[in-house]
Length: 445
Ligand SMILES: [Zn+2]
Image (cartoon, rainbow, N blue to C red; front, side, top):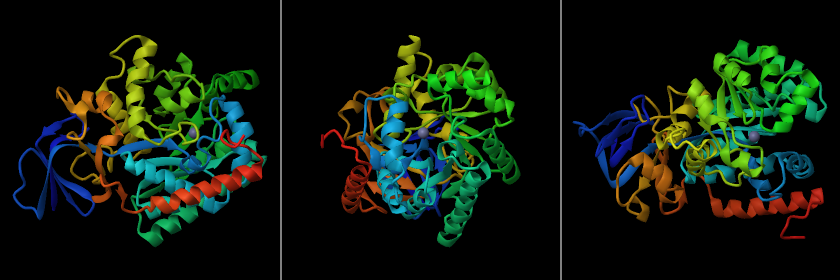
Protein backbone atom coordinates (compact mmCIF):
# COMPACT_ATOMS: atom_id res chain seq x y z
CA UNK A 1 0.00 0.00 0.00
CA UNK A 2 1.27 3.43 -1.04
CA UNK A 3 0.31 6.06 1.55
CA UNK A 4 -0.02 9.82 1.02
CA UNK A 5 0.03 12.15 4.00
CA UNK A 6 -1.21 15.63 2.98
CA UNK A 7 -2.12 18.56 5.24
CA UNK A 8 -5.80 18.20 4.28
CA UNK A 9 -7.89 15.43 2.76
CA UNK A 10 -11.10 16.96 1.45
CA UNK A 11 -13.13 13.76 1.22
CA UNK A 12 -16.46 15.05 -0.24
CA UNK A 13 -18.04 11.99 1.44
CA UNK A 14 -21.57 12.09 2.91
CA UNK A 15 -20.44 14.01 5.99
CA UNK A 16 -18.07 16.15 3.91
CA UNK A 17 -15.25 15.24 6.28
CA UNK A 18 -12.02 17.17 6.06
CA UNK A 19 -9.15 15.21 7.57
CA UNK A 20 -6.29 17.36 8.80
CA UNK A 21 -2.83 15.81 8.48
CA UNK A 22 -4.46 12.51 7.48
CA UNK A 23 -3.40 9.38 5.62
CA UNK A 24 -4.79 7.93 2.41
CA UNK A 25 -3.68 4.48 1.24
CA UNK A 26 -3.78 3.29 -2.38
CA UNK A 27 -3.54 -0.26 -3.68
CA UNK A 28 -4.23 -1.57 -7.19
CA UNK A 29 -5.85 1.66 -8.31
CA UNK A 30 -8.23 1.92 -5.37
CA UNK A 31 -8.42 3.79 -2.10
CA UNK A 32 -7.95 1.21 0.66
CA UNK A 33 -7.35 3.43 3.67
CA UNK A 34 -8.49 6.91 4.78
CA UNK A 35 -7.80 8.02 8.35
CA UNK A 36 -6.39 10.56 10.71
CA UNK A 37 -4.26 7.72 12.13
CA UNK A 38 -1.08 6.47 10.51
CA UNK A 39 -1.61 2.94 9.15
CA UNK A 40 0.20 0.02 10.79
CA UNK A 41 1.53 -1.46 7.59
CA UNK A 42 2.58 0.28 4.40
CA UNK A 43 5.17 0.20 1.64
CA UNK A 44 5.94 3.88 1.53
CA UNK A 45 4.57 7.11 2.99
CA UNK A 46 4.80 10.20 0.80
CA UNK A 47 4.59 13.28 3.01
CA UNK A 48 2.76 16.17 1.38
CA UNK A 49 3.05 19.17 3.70
CA UNK A 50 1.03 22.26 2.73
CA UNK A 51 -0.87 20.17 0.22
CA UNK A 52 -4.63 19.57 -0.14
CA UNK A 53 -6.04 16.36 -1.62
CA UNK A 54 -9.36 16.68 -3.48
CA UNK A 55 -11.34 14.10 -5.45
CA UNK A 56 -10.65 14.44 -9.19
CA UNK A 57 -13.16 16.67 -10.96
CA UNK A 58 -15.93 15.14 -13.07
CA UNK A 59 -16.69 17.12 -16.22
CA UNK A 60 -20.17 15.83 -17.04
CA UNK A 61 -20.77 17.45 -20.42
CA UNK A 62 -18.30 18.17 -23.18
CA UNK A 63 -17.50 17.66 -26.84
CA UNK A 64 -13.80 17.36 -26.21
CA UNK A 65 -12.60 17.07 -29.82
CA UNK A 66 -13.87 20.60 -30.43
CA UNK A 67 -10.49 21.90 -29.25
CA UNK A 68 -9.89 22.01 -33.02
CA UNK A 69 -12.68 24.59 -33.38
CA UNK A 70 -11.75 26.71 -30.36
CA UNK A 71 -11.86 30.41 -31.19
CA UNK A 72 -13.21 29.73 -34.70
CA UNK A 73 -16.02 32.14 -33.93
CA UNK A 74 -16.76 33.90 -30.68
CA UNK A 75 -19.24 36.57 -29.65
CA UNK A 76 -22.24 35.34 -31.63
CA UNK A 77 -25.34 33.51 -30.36
CA UNK A 78 -25.77 29.73 -30.38
CA UNK A 79 -27.82 29.63 -33.57
CA UNK A 80 -25.31 31.58 -35.73
CA UNK A 81 -22.30 29.99 -34.07
CA UNK A 82 -23.64 26.49 -34.77
CA UNK A 83 -25.19 26.93 -38.22
CA UNK A 84 -22.69 29.27 -39.89
CA UNK A 85 -19.42 28.19 -38.34
CA UNK A 86 -19.37 24.98 -36.34
CA UNK A 87 -21.55 22.65 -38.45
CA UNK A 88 -19.92 23.51 -41.84
CA UNK A 89 -16.48 22.70 -40.39
CA UNK A 90 -17.67 19.64 -38.45
CA UNK A 91 -18.95 18.09 -41.69
CA UNK A 92 -15.33 17.99 -42.90
CA UNK A 93 -13.93 16.28 -39.81
CA UNK A 94 -12.11 13.03 -40.44
CA UNK A 95 -11.95 10.36 -37.72
CA UNK A 96 -8.24 11.07 -37.08
CA UNK A 97 -9.02 14.79 -36.57
CA UNK A 98 -11.46 13.83 -33.83
CA UNK A 99 -8.83 11.59 -32.22
CA UNK A 100 -6.17 14.31 -32.07
CA UNK A 101 -8.64 17.02 -31.04
CA UNK A 102 -9.89 14.80 -28.23
CA UNK A 103 -6.41 13.84 -27.05
CA UNK A 104 -5.42 17.49 -26.90
CA UNK A 105 -8.54 18.35 -24.90
CA UNK A 106 -7.93 15.42 -22.56
CA UNK A 107 -4.43 16.79 -21.89
CA UNK A 108 -6.03 20.10 -20.87
CA UNK A 109 -8.55 18.33 -18.66
CA UNK A 110 -6.03 16.16 -16.82
CA UNK A 111 -3.74 19.12 -16.24
CA UNK A 112 -6.60 21.10 -14.69
CA UNK A 113 -7.74 18.29 -12.39
CA UNK A 114 -10.43 16.43 -14.33
CA UNK A 115 -10.19 12.67 -13.94
CA UNK A 116 -13.55 11.66 -15.52
CA UNK A 117 -15.52 13.27 -18.34
CA UNK A 118 -18.67 12.62 -20.32
CA UNK A 119 -18.58 13.33 -24.05
CA UNK A 120 -20.98 13.54 -26.97
CA UNK A 121 -19.75 13.74 -30.58
CA UNK A 122 -19.50 12.13 -34.02
CA UNK A 123 -16.76 9.56 -34.72
CA UNK A 124 -17.05 8.98 -30.96
CA UNK A 125 -14.92 5.83 -31.12
CA UNK A 126 -11.97 8.16 -31.83
CA UNK A 127 -12.71 10.01 -28.58
CA UNK A 128 -12.81 6.61 -26.88
CA UNK A 129 -9.40 5.70 -28.37
CA UNK A 130 -7.95 9.00 -27.16
CA UNK A 131 -9.39 8.40 -23.66
CA UNK A 132 -8.00 4.86 -23.73
CA UNK A 133 -4.53 6.07 -24.78
CA UNK A 134 -4.58 8.83 -22.16
CA UNK A 135 -6.01 6.47 -19.49
CA UNK A 136 -8.64 8.92 -18.29
CA UNK A 137 -12.10 7.74 -17.18
CA UNK A 138 -14.98 8.67 -19.48
CA UNK A 139 -18.61 8.12 -20.35
CA UNK A 140 -18.89 8.23 -24.13
CA UNK A 141 -22.03 8.98 -26.11
CA UNK A 142 -22.49 9.09 -29.87
CA UNK A 143 -24.45 12.23 -30.81
CA UNK A 144 -27.60 11.11 -32.62
CA UNK A 145 -29.68 13.65 -34.58
CA UNK A 146 -31.90 12.32 -37.37
CA UNK A 147 -33.44 15.78 -37.85
CA UNK A 148 -30.05 17.47 -38.46
CA UNK A 149 -28.76 14.71 -40.73
CA UNK A 150 -32.03 13.97 -42.47
CA UNK A 151 -31.75 10.25 -41.77
CA UNK A 152 -34.35 7.68 -40.79
CA UNK A 153 -34.62 7.15 -37.01
CA UNK A 154 -33.66 3.44 -37.23
CA UNK A 155 -30.69 4.30 -39.45
CA UNK A 156 -29.50 7.02 -37.09
CA UNK A 157 -29.88 4.71 -34.08
CA UNK A 158 -27.57 2.16 -35.74
CA UNK A 159 -24.69 4.63 -35.27
CA UNK A 160 -25.10 4.30 -31.50
CA UNK A 161 -25.37 0.52 -31.68
CA UNK A 162 -22.23 0.26 -33.81
CA UNK A 163 -20.42 2.60 -31.45
CA UNK A 164 -21.52 0.46 -28.49
CA UNK A 165 -20.06 -2.67 -30.12
CA UNK A 166 -16.82 -0.91 -31.13
CA UNK A 167 -16.44 0.52 -27.64
CA UNK A 168 -17.01 -2.82 -26.02
CA UNK A 169 -14.32 -4.36 -28.29
CA UNK A 170 -11.90 -1.55 -27.40
CA UNK A 171 -12.57 -1.98 -23.67
CA UNK A 172 -11.93 -5.72 -23.75
CA UNK A 173 -8.87 -5.54 -26.01
CA UNK A 174 -7.24 -2.89 -23.80
CA UNK A 175 -8.48 -4.18 -20.42
CA UNK A 176 -10.23 -0.89 -19.68
CA UNK A 177 -13.30 -1.98 -17.70
CA UNK A 178 -14.21 0.83 -15.34
CA UNK A 179 -12.37 3.37 -17.53
CA UNK A 180 -14.65 3.72 -20.55
CA UNK A 181 -18.43 3.59 -20.22
CA UNK A 182 -21.18 3.68 -22.82
CA UNK A 183 -24.35 5.78 -22.70
CA UNK A 184 -26.85 6.90 -25.34
CA UNK A 185 -26.53 10.45 -26.71
CA UNK A 186 -29.61 11.70 -28.58
CA UNK A 187 -28.55 15.29 -29.28
CA UNK A 188 -31.70 17.16 -28.20
CA UNK A 189 -35.50 17.14 -28.51
CA UNK A 190 -35.18 19.43 -31.58
CA UNK A 191 -32.37 17.39 -33.18
CA UNK A 192 -34.22 14.07 -32.89
CA UNK A 193 -37.62 12.84 -34.04
CA UNK A 194 -40.08 11.41 -31.56
CA UNK A 195 -39.45 7.97 -33.11
CA UNK A 196 -35.70 8.20 -32.47
CA UNK A 197 -36.23 9.36 -28.88
CA UNK A 198 -38.55 6.41 -28.29
CA UNK A 199 -36.10 3.92 -29.83
CA UNK A 200 -33.39 5.26 -27.51
CA UNK A 201 -35.70 5.10 -24.49
CA UNK A 202 -36.60 1.47 -25.17
CA UNK A 203 -32.96 0.49 -25.74
CA UNK A 204 -31.85 2.23 -22.55
CA UNK A 205 -34.56 0.41 -20.58
CA UNK A 206 -33.63 -2.91 -22.15
CA UNK A 207 -29.84 -2.69 -21.75
CA UNK A 208 -29.70 -0.53 -18.62
CA UNK A 209 -27.65 2.29 -20.15
CA UNK A 210 -28.00 5.98 -19.32
CA UNK A 211 -29.06 8.79 -21.67
CA UNK A 212 -27.20 12.07 -22.25
CA UNK A 213 -29.14 14.89 -23.95
CA UNK A 214 -29.11 18.69 -24.44
CA UNK A 215 -32.29 20.17 -22.96
CA UNK A 216 -33.90 23.64 -22.78
CA UNK A 217 -30.63 25.36 -23.57
CA UNK A 218 -31.99 28.53 -25.15
CA UNK A 219 -35.15 30.59 -24.93
CA UNK A 220 -35.77 30.12 -28.64
CA UNK A 221 -35.58 26.31 -28.25
CA UNK A 222 -38.42 26.53 -25.71
CA UNK A 223 -40.44 29.00 -27.80
CA UNK A 224 -40.13 26.82 -30.92
CA UNK A 225 -41.20 23.78 -28.97
CA UNK A 226 -44.26 25.56 -27.56
CA UNK A 227 -45.11 26.84 -31.06
CA UNK A 228 -44.91 23.41 -32.70
CA UNK A 229 -46.17 21.08 -29.96
CA UNK A 230 -47.79 23.40 -27.43
CA UNK A 231 -45.40 21.92 -24.88
CA UNK A 232 -42.03 22.97 -23.43
CA UNK A 233 -39.16 20.62 -24.41
CA UNK A 234 -39.38 19.06 -20.93
CA UNK A 235 -43.17 18.59 -21.13
CA UNK A 236 -42.68 17.10 -24.59
CA UNK A 237 -40.09 14.55 -23.39
CA UNK A 238 -42.36 13.73 -20.46
CA UNK A 239 -45.29 13.20 -22.84
CA UNK A 240 -43.36 10.56 -24.80
CA UNK A 241 -42.23 8.74 -21.64
CA UNK A 242 -38.58 9.72 -22.11
CA UNK A 243 -37.73 11.19 -18.72
CA UNK A 244 -36.44 8.85 -16.00
CA UNK A 245 -33.68 8.90 -13.39
CA UNK A 246 -31.14 7.67 -15.97
CA UNK A 247 -31.44 10.90 -18.00
CA UNK A 248 -28.53 13.34 -17.81
CA UNK A 249 -29.75 16.67 -19.17
CA UNK A 250 -27.21 19.31 -20.18
CA UNK A 251 -27.98 23.02 -19.65
CA UNK A 252 -31.69 23.29 -18.63
CA UNK A 253 -31.43 27.08 -18.71
CA UNK A 254 -35.11 27.79 -19.48
CA UNK A 255 -37.35 25.46 -17.44
CA UNK A 256 -40.77 26.60 -16.22
CA UNK A 257 -41.76 25.88 -12.61
CA UNK A 258 -43.84 23.01 -14.01
CA UNK A 259 -40.78 21.68 -15.85
CA UNK A 260 -38.77 21.73 -12.61
CA UNK A 261 -41.49 19.66 -10.93
CA UNK A 262 -41.27 17.11 -13.75
CA UNK A 263 -37.46 16.90 -13.47
CA UNK A 264 -37.75 16.45 -9.71
CA UNK A 265 -40.50 13.84 -10.04
CA UNK A 266 -38.51 11.83 -12.62
CA UNK A 267 -35.13 12.17 -10.87
CA UNK A 268 -33.46 13.69 -13.94
CA UNK A 269 -29.87 14.91 -13.41
CA UNK A 270 -28.97 18.43 -14.55
CA UNK A 271 -25.53 19.15 -16.04
CA UNK A 272 -24.78 22.85 -15.49
CA UNK A 273 -22.42 24.64 -17.92
CA UNK A 274 -22.14 28.22 -16.59
CA UNK A 275 -19.38 29.53 -18.88
CA UNK A 276 -20.83 28.14 -22.10
CA UNK A 277 -24.31 29.45 -21.26
CA UNK A 278 -22.87 32.91 -20.63
CA UNK A 279 -20.59 32.95 -23.66
CA UNK A 280 -23.33 31.93 -26.09
CA UNK A 281 -25.70 34.33 -24.30
CA UNK A 282 -28.12 31.47 -23.62
CA UNK A 283 -28.77 32.69 -20.08
CA UNK A 284 -28.20 31.37 -16.56
CA UNK A 285 -29.79 28.11 -15.41
CA UNK A 286 -31.92 28.41 -12.24
CA UNK A 287 -29.57 26.17 -10.26
CA UNK A 288 -30.67 27.39 -6.78
CA UNK A 289 -34.24 26.32 -7.64
CA UNK A 290 -33.01 22.88 -8.74
CA UNK A 291 -31.04 22.45 -5.53
CA UNK A 292 -33.95 23.64 -3.40
CA UNK A 293 -36.11 20.92 -5.00
CA UNK A 294 -33.45 18.29 -4.39
CA UNK A 295 -32.58 17.84 -8.07
CA UNK A 296 -29.01 16.61 -8.54
CA UNK A 297 -26.91 19.27 -10.30
CA UNK A 298 -23.45 18.44 -11.65
CA UNK A 299 -20.96 20.76 -13.34
CA UNK A 300 -19.43 20.79 -16.81
CA UNK A 301 -17.47 22.89 -19.26
CA UNK A 302 -19.37 22.05 -22.47
CA UNK A 303 -17.18 21.86 -25.60
CA UNK A 304 -14.00 23.91 -25.83
CA UNK A 305 -15.40 25.90 -28.77
CA UNK A 306 -18.07 27.45 -26.56
CA UNK A 307 -16.09 27.94 -23.35
CA UNK A 308 -13.12 28.16 -24.57
CA UNK A 309 -11.44 26.10 -21.87
CA UNK A 310 -11.87 22.68 -20.32
CA UNK A 311 -10.94 23.79 -16.83
CA UNK A 312 -13.49 22.63 -14.23
CA UNK A 313 -11.98 24.85 -11.55
CA UNK A 314 -13.17 27.87 -13.52
CA UNK A 315 -16.71 26.41 -13.61
CA UNK A 316 -16.66 25.73 -9.85
CA UNK A 317 -15.72 29.31 -9.14
CA UNK A 318 -18.24 30.73 -11.61
CA UNK A 319 -21.07 28.51 -10.34
CA UNK A 320 -20.37 29.68 -6.79
CA UNK A 321 -20.50 33.35 -7.87
CA UNK A 322 -23.01 33.86 -10.64
CA UNK A 323 -26.10 32.57 -8.83
CA UNK A 324 -25.38 34.87 -5.89
CA UNK A 325 -25.37 37.84 -8.23
CA UNK A 326 -28.48 36.80 -10.13
CA UNK A 327 -30.52 36.08 -6.99
CA UNK A 328 -28.87 38.76 -4.84
CA UNK A 329 -28.64 36.09 -2.15
CA UNK A 330 -25.11 35.06 -1.03
CA UNK A 331 -26.40 31.83 0.52
CA UNK A 332 -27.82 30.12 -2.58
CA UNK A 333 -24.67 28.18 -3.50
CA UNK A 334 -21.89 27.82 -0.93
CA UNK A 335 -18.27 27.10 -1.81
CA UNK A 336 -18.78 23.55 -0.55
CA UNK A 337 -21.87 23.02 -2.71
CA UNK A 338 -19.99 24.26 -5.78
CA UNK A 339 -17.23 21.75 -5.10
CA UNK A 340 -19.79 18.97 -4.57
CA UNK A 341 -21.27 19.78 -7.98
CA UNK A 342 -17.86 19.18 -9.56
CA UNK A 343 -17.16 15.92 -7.72
CA UNK A 344 -19.73 13.71 -5.97
CA UNK A 345 -22.78 15.18 -7.74
CA UNK A 346 -21.06 14.44 -11.06
CA UNK A 347 -20.55 10.85 -9.97
CA UNK A 348 -24.28 10.55 -9.11
CA UNK A 349 -25.24 12.08 -12.45
CA UNK A 350 -23.15 9.52 -14.35
CA UNK A 351 -24.34 6.64 -12.16
CA UNK A 352 -20.76 6.09 -10.97
CA UNK A 353 -21.21 7.16 -7.34
CA UNK A 354 -19.95 3.83 -6.02
CA UNK A 355 -16.72 4.14 -7.98
CA UNK A 356 -15.68 7.82 -8.02
CA UNK A 357 -16.56 11.33 -6.79
CA UNK A 358 -15.24 11.21 -3.22
CA UNK A 359 -12.17 10.02 -1.34
CA UNK A 360 -13.54 6.92 0.41
CA UNK A 361 -12.36 3.37 0.88
CA UNK A 362 -13.39 1.19 -2.07
CA UNK A 363 -13.48 3.97 -4.65
CA UNK A 364 -10.90 4.52 -7.36
CA UNK A 365 -7.86 6.60 -6.44
CA UNK A 366 -8.69 9.54 -8.71
CA UNK A 367 -7.55 12.74 -7.03
CA UNK A 368 -5.88 16.12 -7.30
CA UNK A 369 -3.06 17.46 -5.12
CA UNK A 370 -3.11 21.23 -4.62
CA UNK A 371 0.01 23.06 -3.48
CA UNK A 372 -0.77 25.79 -0.94
CA UNK A 373 2.85 26.91 -0.76
CA UNK A 374 2.85 28.08 -4.36
CA UNK A 375 -0.28 30.20 -3.84
CA UNK A 376 0.19 33.60 -2.26
CA UNK A 377 -3.59 33.59 -1.87
CA UNK A 378 -3.52 30.71 0.64
CA UNK A 379 -2.55 33.04 3.50
CA UNK A 380 -4.19 33.62 5.93
CA UNK A 381 -5.89 30.28 6.20
CA UNK A 382 -9.49 30.11 7.46
CA UNK A 383 -11.52 27.58 5.54
CA UNK A 384 -10.38 25.08 2.96
CA UNK A 385 -13.56 25.23 0.80
CA UNK A 386 -13.47 29.02 0.71
CA UNK A 387 -9.80 29.04 -0.22
CA UNK A 388 -10.17 26.50 -2.99
CA UNK A 389 -13.29 27.95 -4.59
CA UNK A 390 -12.76 31.70 -4.19
CA UNK A 391 -9.00 32.23 -3.85
CA UNK A 392 -7.17 29.52 -5.78
CA UNK A 393 -7.36 28.04 -9.26
CA UNK A 394 -5.98 25.19 -11.33
CA UNK A 395 -2.53 26.82 -11.62
CA UNK A 396 -1.84 25.54 -8.12
CA UNK A 397 -2.38 21.88 -8.95
CA UNK A 398 0.77 19.96 -8.06
CA UNK A 399 -0.29 16.59 -9.41
CA UNK A 400 -3.26 14.64 -10.75
CA UNK A 401 -3.75 10.93 -10.13
CA UNK A 402 -6.07 8.53 -11.94
CA UNK A 403 -6.52 4.94 -10.78
CA UNK A 404 -3.68 5.44 -8.32
CA UNK A 405 -1.28 6.48 -11.09
CA UNK A 406 0.47 9.82 -11.29
CA UNK A 407 -0.85 11.29 -14.56
CA UNK A 408 0.37 14.88 -14.26
CA UNK A 409 2.97 16.46 -12.05
CA UNK A 410 4.07 20.02 -11.42
CA UNK A 411 7.04 19.73 -13.73
CA UNK A 412 4.35 20.16 -16.37
CA UNK A 413 4.64 16.58 -17.47
CA UNK A 414 1.67 14.55 -18.64
CA UNK A 415 2.44 10.87 -18.31
CA UNK A 416 0.40 9.57 -21.24
CA UNK A 417 0.28 12.49 -23.73
CA UNK A 418 3.04 14.16 -25.77
CA UNK A 419 1.63 17.69 -25.88
CA UNK A 420 4.45 19.23 -27.94
CA UNK A 421 3.80 16.88 -30.85
CA UNK A 422 0.05 17.35 -30.54
CA UNK A 423 0.21 21.16 -30.70
CA UNK A 424 1.45 21.09 -34.28
CA UNK A 425 -0.93 18.34 -35.36
CA UNK A 426 -3.97 20.19 -33.98
CA UNK A 427 -2.89 23.48 -35.58
CA UNK A 428 -2.42 21.79 -38.96
CA UNK A 429 -5.88 20.18 -38.73
CA UNK A 430 -7.43 23.55 -37.94
CA UNK A 431 -5.77 25.21 -40.96
CA UNK A 432 -6.86 22.41 -43.31
CA UNK A 433 -10.47 22.45 -42.07
CA UNK A 434 -11.04 26.19 -42.20
CA UNK A 435 -9.48 26.36 -45.69
CA UNK A 436 -11.72 23.54 -46.93
CA UNK A 437 -14.78 25.21 -45.40
CA UNK A 438 -13.78 28.60 -46.83
CA UNK A 439 -13.94 30.24 -43.39
CA UNK A 440 -11.45 32.91 -42.50
CA UNK A 441 -10.65 33.10 -38.79
CA UNK A 442 -10.28 36.59 -37.28
CA UNK A 443 -6.46 36.52 -37.50
CA UNK A 444 -6.58 35.69 -41.21
CA UNK A 445 -9.16 38.28 -42.29
ZN1 LIG B 1 -23.16 20.53 -25.51
